[in-house]
Amino acid sequence: MPQKVYDAIVVGSGANGGWAAKQLCEAGMEVVMLEAGRKLDPATDFSEHTMPWELPLRGRQDPRNPLLERRPVGKRCYACGETNAHFFIDEVDNPITTEEGKPFWWIRGNQVGGRTILWGRQSYRMSDWDFKAASRDGFGDDWPISYADLEPYYDEVERFIGVSGRREGIEVLPDGQFLPPMAYTCGEIELEKGLQKMGRRMTIGRAAVLTRRHNGRAACHYCGPCHFGCRTGSYFSSPVSTLPAAEATGKFTLVPNARAWRVLMDDENRAKGVIYHRTEDGETEEVFAKVVVLAASTLASTRILLNSKSDEHPDGLANSSGVLGCYLMDHHFVSGANGVLPKLEGQKPEQANRPNGIYIPRFKNLRDPASKSKQYLRGYGFQGGENVTIYEHAASSPGFGAEWKHAMRSANVHNMNIGGWGEMLPRKENRVRLDPEVKDKWGVPVLEIDCAWSDNEKAMSKDIAEEAQAMLEAAGCEDVVPYRVMPPPGFCIHEVGTARMGEDPGSSVVNSFQQTHDVRNLFVMDGSSFVTIGCVNPTLTMMALTVRSSEYLADRYAKGELV
Image (cartoon, rainbow, N blue to C red):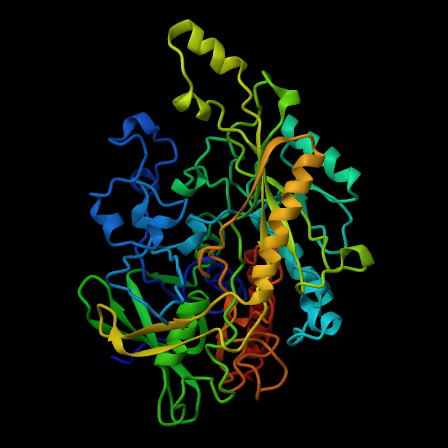
């Protein structure tokens, strides 16, 4: 029997794979999706309503948990807990290697929906301060697109997934198509007043969390721990949003437990399919299509391209430029400050389980001469707000019975925290390659990652802590304590780059539509195409790029230009 040939293969079912499948299926293309993980059952896999007292260690990680033992990096993530460790990839079966003295914490999801099951949902648009940063400060390269090119696709993504927020008219943080915003706490109102004295702006976080019913999904009911899953589908994840839209066309086939590792080529330098391992038994399968879309995540897609090397592509598929794997970036964070607001003592914080925080847009190295820094290029934004875990202070407080209860109710629980998310400069030496010796459980070479913070990021981190302290003090906070940690790259889970976008095939991997320069029917639709990372969370931009690229792909496919 002849092997079925689909119109398109999409590798990866997360934020970008879901959008690619939706767009291509709605354009009339028949799509098969390969996902390395399994399909989750919210009734048994989600635990957002499980209370700490229902767990043996009251929600703390149990060092004897075999799932956590196999996730030495994943368990460092705040979102990894006793009931959801299975959302994270098994790092024993799926290792990486790093250069000595240069750790990289790659935190990966492992299910249909990928990291959209776990993500922090912060959704901000990049601006031309990001897309055209090189023209302003001379470092690196501009993107081959501008904000105007991406604006209608930001609109389309926001309207479909639902993003709550407030319009502010800030150039460096473009407004979007918002659902009603969430409310500030009393402490955050005081913080905004302090920032206004300093001439700075603040807004409620722009979050892919529904504040009213939208596209058949229920509004958030503020139950709290979103990273344990959401049975109401109130935050965006591909299994409750884009994948059902693809399925509704009748042109979508999902293949879970299918770990793609190589793109198959024909004799005319066209992609013809993908080879994958069935994770249950390790057997290999092949699937064929006229177009291949890699959306497995930044490093996973790049690994597939590197493992697809051949006599025609000796350094990896689509790597005639030699830059595949280069210019890896992540945000640096865990620098900021904590403090308390004494003027609110005795007032109970509201919005206790609000799945969101505040956002302070970038204010450094912009047009205002006072914003210029001699120590570093680019800038950062702040996230955080009031710590509204109401009785967290109880564990260390003295007392007993009625006296203790009174002390808890009257104590100052208005703790404020703001932390910076800073831009990492794109440097060619921050790169990944295949390890010549180490392989994963299925015998496929793994990534060797060579990445480290530069002096620019370190200087920026120092400034973040200093500015955070100044802003909290301006808001009237006391006992302000700055902090500056800078964990290894990867820990922010915003890794981008490694298959960069550009007009010149000699210095980039894909064009402005994420189509590889070397293979016309091969696309890479995820964060790997980023030229710069900016300082805002990247997922919204990844999805907007995918919608734009999928529109282009479907149009060129219909015209016969890709086959």
